[in-house]
Amino acid sequence: ELIEASAGDHRPFLVRRLSDGLAAQGFKLLVLDYGLDARDPGFFHREGFVLIERIVEFERGPTPVNQYPQPAGFAVQPYQAVNCQAVLDLEKESFPWLWWNSPIEWDAYVTNPGVEVLVGTFEGTVVGYAGFVVYRQDGHLDRLAVHHAYQGQRFGAGLLSEALGRMLERGARRITLTTQEDNLRSQRLYEQNGFHRGRWAYEVHGKWLAPREDSGT
Image (cartoon, rainbow, N blue to C red; front, top):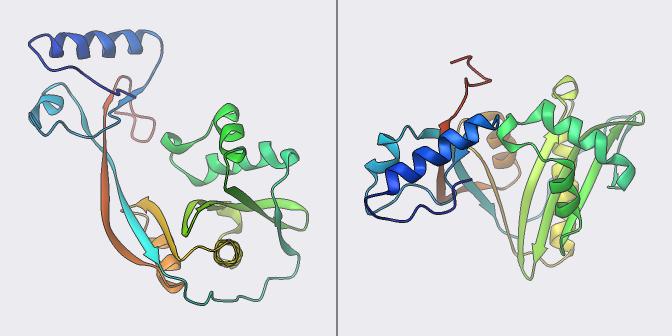
């Protein structure tokens, strides 16, 4: 992440030196932490930064949660440390590589105050998980994932229902989530469960330092 690039005549030189140094170390993508500079929005474009993803917000109020009959063999239970590797493997099956957690990042996440993680298992195998946080009266669904081999069996709906129920039990009056703008399948699930598109959107800009893994370019 590029957190700050001070203004001035030497800014292009600093950004290029940073890009070259990271590329030499094997890094593949340099991401802007704060979006494009409003003072000179064309600067980062001129330096090779492009739109990586557009993130949109969905929200809902404290309305009743849809209840889904759980398929035979499917169970939802609190996350335990023994589930760590299965969840990290599941992330790699479910999200673009930009959003994968490292073991250190994941351990830091699950120990944050207010964070709760639910794990969905089918016949003893971890097939999905939901991570969320509640702070005062605000809840946020951080992650919802189901292994692609088990999608279409209402496991995601079951996990979402359980997560929403827990957030409401903990006093959440407003629940939000963010997702990729082109992730239409997930958006349909959220809309079926009382969410509507919020006003907030965020563009992720970055500079590729090596060939893209998703396109080979």
